[in-house]
Every structure is written in C-alpha cells, then in structure tokens.
Length: 242
Ligand SMILES: NC(=O)c1ccc[n+]([C@@H]2O[C@H](COP(=O)([O-])OP(=O)(O)OC[C@H]3O[C@@H](n4cnc5c(N)ncnc54)[C@H](O)[C@@H]3O)[C@@H](O)[C@H]2O)c1
Image (tube, rainbow, N blue to C red; front, side):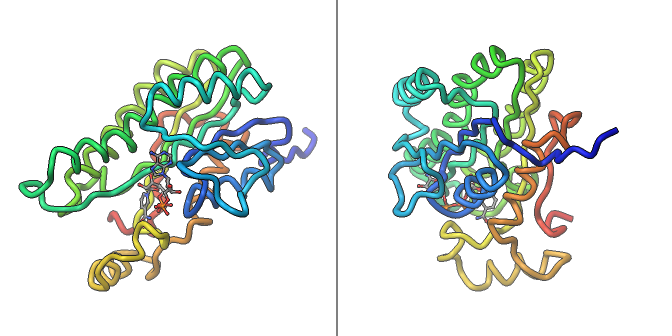
C-alpha cells in the first residue's frame, strides 16, 4: 500500500466558527496549514484573520446562519468539514442566573451548533461525505459548580453529536466531539487564580491545555486518519476529568 499523508486536507473546505481567537483560531490555522480552504466565522473579523476567507456571523442567529451558509455554498465554498467551536460562558450559581444568562449560553453553544450543522449536512451529503467536530467540554460531562448553563449546553452538544452521527453516518458524514479540560484562552484568562490552580492540580500532566493541543485533535478527527471514527467524544484534558 502506498504511503498516504492522511492528515492532508488539500481540496477540502472547512467552516470554523469562533475562529477569531483561542481554540477556533488555532483550529483554523492548523487546518489551513494542512491544506484545507478554511472559512473563518465569528462575530467580528479579526486583524489579521487566521485564514483568507473570513465572514462575520452570529451563530445564534438562525436567519443569519441560513443566509451566510447559502451564500458560501453559492460561491463554491460548501463544506467538507465543519468545526462548531463558537462558545460563551455566563457563570453564576443557578439560583442567581437570569433568564438571559441561561438562554444566551444555550443559544450560542447549542443552538448555534445546530444551525450550522443543519445547514452543512445536506451540502456534505451532496458532496458524498464530510466530517463535523463539535467543541464540547469536560464540564458538560461532569457538571461544574457555577456553570449549570454552560454544562447543560455542552452536555446537550454531546447528545446532539451522537444523534447527528446516527443520522448522517449512512451519508458518509462523521460527527464527533472534542471535550477539552481547561484551556489557556481569553475565556479562562479572568478566572480566579484558585480555579486555574485547581484545574492544573487535577490535570495528570500538571498543566492547562494550549489551544493548539485541542486543534491537533480536531485535525485528527477531520482527517482520513479518523475515517472510521464517528459518534465519539475525545477528551483533550490531560486527564483532568479522571
Ligand atoms: N477555554 C477553555 O478552558 C475551554 C474548555 C473547554 C471547552 N471550551 C470551548 O472551546 C470553544 C472555544 O473557546 P475558547 O476558550 O477559545 O474561547 P474564546 O472566548 O477565546 O473564543 C471564543 C470565540 O467564539 C466567538 N463567539 C462567541 N459567540 C459567538 C457567536 N454568537 N457567533 C460567532 N462566534 C462567537 C468569540 O467571538 C470568540 O472568538 C468554546 O466552545 C468553549 O466552550 C473552552
């Protein structure tokens, strides 16, 4: 058998949400470095962008997602790969969460992934296959004090990943999730030092993840190396969950 570069994404178009910074930016850069034509999507367009094609999009706005994705498809940028990464936190103990604290986190983290996947799935089917990676969290698996809204959104995203994998498998579309522990990004930059110290302490590797650590696993799940992997939740947490 000839040696194939199974991480090569040449000829593939990848949509990455929340691509301005943090994990999404690292994913956009890594997929592009492996040959994918990456479309970055975020609330605003960063300077410099991580990839030449970048669109402003609020993933929680169903009509905007419909319009943006139809426009991309019309321009020959239908996706082979989709990374649902955009996410937010609005932390607080549940009895102090406002309706908006609850709904806004669910809208971005869960509804947003649904809107993008709903748009991408038929386009991937037409192309004969594809891969979707949802960025969940270990806090969706174990529940986190002060994050009932976020934990619910990420647990929902894991359920959504598995159901979508069932529905889309027969069309050659794989759907997986990564489940990071604490990652050094702007999302975690303003946490109490004690919360960061606890996460490091829980990690069997003694450090927090970097965005590139998560991006590497997203690349793997997007690639032909993972050709028989679907419905899987891959923890990228240095063992923090254990
Ligand atoms: N940082 C962590 O410790 C950690 C751990 C586990 C999972 N995650 C998940 O990883 C993903 C990325 O997080 P990060 O740490 O890079 O955060 P981040 O805050 O650095 O980046 C999030 C990006 O998402 C974008 N975004 C937010 N709302 C959006 C919307 N409505 N539409 C489009 N884009 C939107 C932001 O503008 C930003 O660029 C999130 O889903 C987060 O829940 C993060």
